[in-house]
Length: 185
Image 1 (cartoon, rainbow, N blue to C red):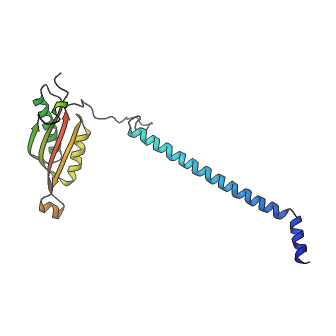
Image 2 (cartoon, one colour):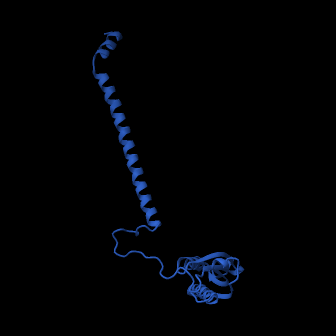
Image 3 (cartoon, rainbow, N blue to C red):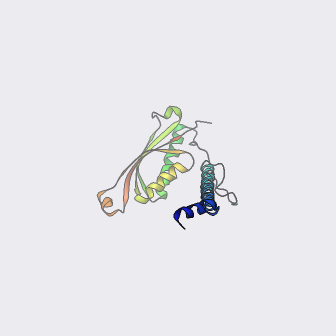
């Protein structure tokens, strides 16, 4: 048989055409299934992100099936006190307690009752203290996470030469902390 006859015979038989057709159909089916898997994976990621956003915004507890519901800090968000002086003392006491709870010491403090924010009810203190390096982060968290709401306006930390060389010891920290006083009730 010559080549022309072979070509005619292949062109007239449906087997090669069916094989090409099935190959293209299988390829299209593969791409459709792959696209469906990608879309389902993205949908799962979006659902997980939405659940995390709800949890972070506080709309639902961390695990819906758990018995213990996480609660936030209790108490008033404002500094308590019948007068502005008493409220300033409460603010100073809260900062001093947080520093000593972490093994630090308050070296000096100053209550600012007449500052620039005092018209809107905010009181500020400036405290100089010694705190361990690891305790500084816990101190800042403790101050800002509890009640009443306190705001760390400024932090200046200085490591003495022996602490900088060894990585151990206490930092000298200057904190400016403010809180809002609701006023006399």
